[in-house]
Length: 150
Image (cartoon, rainbow, N blue to C red; front, top):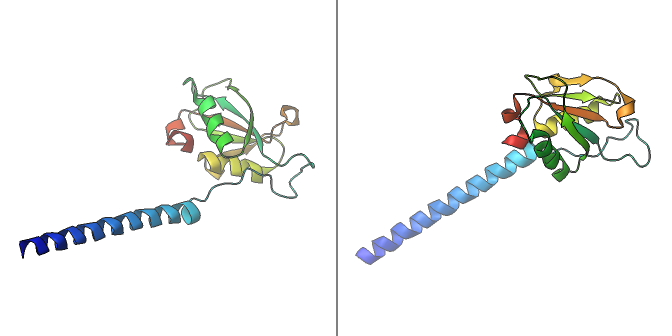
């Protein structure tokens, strides 16, 4: 009788474990697909594009003085299909991270902002077509809140 109750207990524990695994996997799937879907690095149709211009090109500037941040953001974005053409330092320190729209393509700038976790309210238009990038990412002192650092 004792052997039978041990088997029942083991079966119940096994069933509960599998149930928990299914719940975790399901919640992860829902989060990935519905709550926080991945962003596409391609430029939307009709957004001042040429035939060869299909991936959003960005540069990343460090505005907090912490070494290696721009390189980490570059790696994060490249893994997601963005074309990071340059990294460097911003001329002054900034408290908050923001994204600069360089070509008047706010939709692409918002995609970049979403990809790294910057709110749309911090997407600023600063058109400068001499930079040959669609957006500039400025990493401020709030960098621990951004997706590449979580």
